[in-house]
Image 1 (cartoon, rainbow, N blue to C red):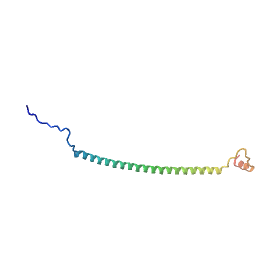
Image 2 (image 1 turned 60 degrees about the horizontal axis):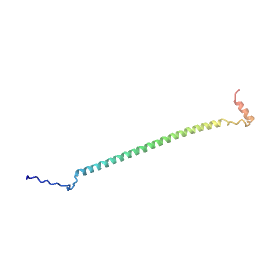
Image 3 (image 1 turned 30 degrees about the vertical axis):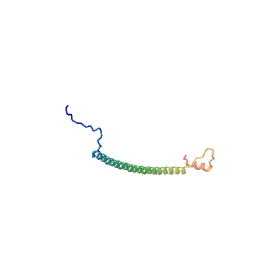
Length: 111
């Protein structure tokens, strides 16, 4: 008979040993994740500040616009009031107009 080399089979009884490489990768990934999270938070904070500033500017513009509208409305009301004070109130046809008023109105109209 010929001599054959003896081969042992291990049948999966080895002990698993974790290498340092996955731990290093995991730690590195955690650091990257933490940095990205900080950057995102900073970006959100900047966006919030920008949005609040824009809201404040819009509110100021709206207040100024309302103020201008108020001034314009006051002027229009003053004009209307002035016109209504100058012009006598129109009377309905059924009301009697006194003779004095009639003479006064006739003098105003040039013939």
